[in-house]
Length: 89
Image (tube, rainbow, N blue to C red):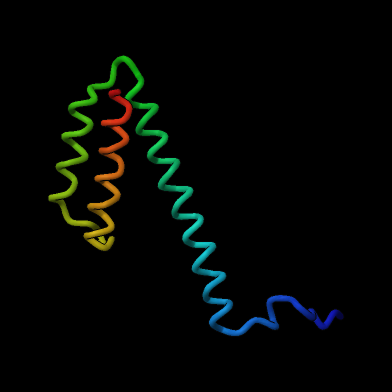
């Protein structure tokens, strides 16, 4: 068996947590970007009522966040609304 020199077993707890935080952050960013891209694509469909989509997203801000940090929840909705505004241009 290998002694795994230089591998993950040699990392401190803080280093392991930092690596985990980085991986989770990267995944969250990828998901956010994918959703934003989907919103842009939806806005480009001719049958989409973009004003209604924006209204619906804005309305979500007043609903319970289902365990998501309210500030993060609101910021994500604002990001998605900004993608709608960008798609209109």
